[in-house]
Image 1: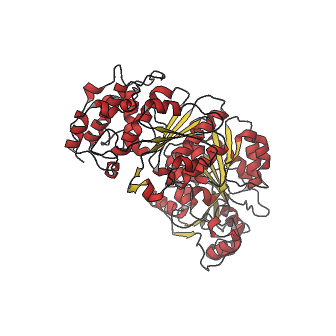
Image 2 (image 1 turned 90 degrees about the vertical axis):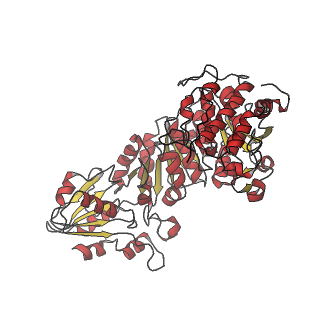
Image 3 (image 1 turned 135 degrees about the vertical axis):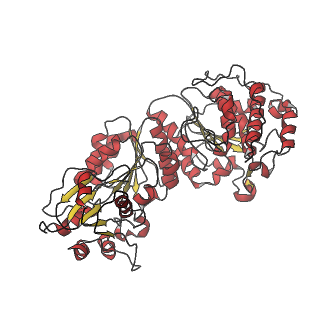
Length: 298
Length: 296
C-alpha cells in the first residue's frame, strides 16, 4: 500500500498545512512525496519518540502532521509520546505504521506489529484505520486527514481475491453474503477470508471487512447486527487475541444480547514453532490462511 | 492528605492582578523584585495549604519562569515546562500574570482541581501541554519552533528542562533534531540545581559539566546564575543561527534555608516550623535579586 499512500499524500500536498515526518523510512517509495512537499517533508531520523512529540506540537499550532515508520517503531517505541503528547491533548496527528501484523515477514519479530491496535485502543480519542485493499488507501488518507483527533493507520498489503472487485471504502463492509457463519476480519485479512469462501454458494459464510476501530468510535452497523441471529460469529485478525477485535466484539455481543449460536476467533499466535519466515508462513502457523479458515468453517 | 489553612490570598495578590484571559504584554524590566518575593511566598503558601512537596525544584525554577513570563513571553512566543514537577511554580507564575485567579491556587492538589501536581493536558490558560513524564518537553518545544518557521511567524520558544531529565534518551533525540534543524528561535533552559530524586546528578548519572557536555552539539551554550535576574536577562537574549542552551546554575529549595540544597526537598513538604521560618524570614534573602547587588 506504500505506493497508494504516496499517491494519496502527493494529491494532498497542495494543502499548505500538511507536514510529513518520516523516521528514516520510505526509500524507494516516498521520494515523490518528498519532491512534492519540499520544506514540509522531514526525515526526523531514527528518533521516533521525538518525531511524535514534534508532530504533536505541530498539530497544536494548526498544522497537519503525518508521521511514518514501521508500525512497532511508532506504537511501541513511542507509546508514551502517543499517550501523553498526542492523545491526552486530542491533537490530530496522523501516525502511519507500515507492516501491520506479520507484514515484515522474515525480517523478524522486532518488526512485526501484532498488538498495535489493541494497545492503541486503550487511548482516549484515538481512531484506528486499517485499509483492507489497495483501493481503500486514498479514502483512508482522506478520512485521516479530515479527522479532528489523533489517528493511527495500520498499513499492510492489499489482498483482493482474484476475480473480486473491492467495494467502496467504508468502516464496515459486507464482502459476500451467505447463510453460513458470519466471518468478520480486520483489514487485509478480510481479503484472505473473502478469497477462502469466494467460490461457495449461498450456504457459505458471510464475510465482513472491518477497517476502523475501536468499536466505540466505529460501532457495527445494523446490517451486521441483524446478520448475527442464530449464527456462529468468527473473528479473524492478524493481531494477538488480547485486545483484539475478537474480544471487543465478544463484549459487544454480550452487551447487545446478540443471539449467536457460536463464537470463534482466529488470531496471531506469535511464534509457536520458534522459527521465522514470510508473512504467509507466520499466518499459516496461526491458522490465518484460506485453507485453515475453510477447515474451520466450511 | 491534610490541607492546611495557610493562605496569603488577600495580602499577596499582585497589584492590579485579576483572572483575565489576556494579560498585559510583557516588557523588559517589568519583573519587580517585590513581585518575585510575592510569588515565592504564594508558592510556599500554596504548597503548605496542599501539604505537598516537590518544592525544591519549584523554588529553583521560579526565578527563571517569572523572568521569562514577565519580560520575554509575548503573544507570538511559547513556553514549555518540560520539568512538569515544577507545576507549582508555573501556576504561581500564571497567577502573577493574571491568568489564574488567586482563590484557585488554593485548589492545588485538591479534588476536582485544574491544578494537579503536574500541569494538565487541557484547559489551563497559559499552559499548552500537560507534562510530567520527563523527556517530552523538548520535542514539543522543537515542534512549536518548527511550526513558527513553517508558518513564517516570528516569536521565540522557551523550554525549561530539569538537569536530571537529560538522562532521558528522548531529550537527546530532541536536541539532535533542534540542532540539525537549526531552530534558532528556540531557547532551552536547564535548571541545573544538581539534585534529582534519589541523589545528586553527579552521583546518579553524571553529565557534568552539562554545558560542556552539550557543547558538542550545534547549539550555543550560555551559563548564568539562575537566581540573578540581570545575568539571566543577558543569557536569554535571542540567538543567531542555532538553538540556545542556557545552563542556569540554581539552588534547589532556593529561599527556604531549611531545605536549600537538600535532597529531601525534592519530595517532602515543609513542616509548619519550616514554613513559618521561610515566610517570616527576611524577604531580601529570599528574593535573590540582592545577591549581585543588581536591581531588577
